[in-house]
Image (cartoon, rainbow, N blue to C red; front, side, top):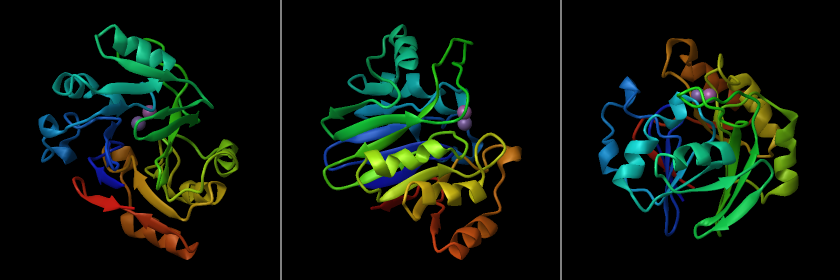
Amino acid sequence: MKITFLGHATLFIETENTKLIVDPFISGNSLAAHIDMNALKADYILITHGHQDHVLDVETIAKNNPEALLISNYEIVEWFSTKGINGHPLNHGGKFKFDFGTLKYVNAIHSSILPDGSYGGNPGGFVLTTPSKCVYIAGDTALTLDMKLIPETCPPLDLAIFPIGDNFTMGYEDASIASDFVNCSKVLGYHYDTFPPIKLDRAKAQSHFRSKGKELILLDIGSAISI
Ligand code: NI
Ligand code: MN
């Protein structure tokens, strides 16, 4: 599995046979100006919650990839269906087997409203399980005890993707505790630097993780890791 960081909370995930885009927010992110959104090919668009900084470019990507299926909670899938975008609704605790593997929608402690003020349902994260790997994409969330359910209910994680920018989500200190809760010491950080209140001191965050015997991966926008 190859995961490319496209800035903020936007991920491009390539499994053996499938391309997934998570929470596309590229055109609104000046730090991601070098990313050509129109070149992105996607089979699926995953949305954790309805905030603008997670859904801004969904319509453009859906238009460029008319076969792509949107996966989110029921309310978000309904909202995008009125714009002609096909979706598969999940709700919290539910999982479904797609052609790339299984996706489970899990709790996040946050808020959610769609850009026009419509109700966005409750926010969530995803546990993505392919035949060879398992990754937890936390979405925007606080540290929550619900994370302890993930190792109880999902395969062992190869990677946890956590927001670390603080202010709107947990910061890196809580994210290091979250990595204990989910039994995964390999963490990819996201949701930082995009806006002034979430500016990250990278060296401090990474040394905090190192001091706990954990790894915090911070990717340049446009670069990737393979797991
Ligand atoms: Ni949010
Ligand atoms: Mn956000």
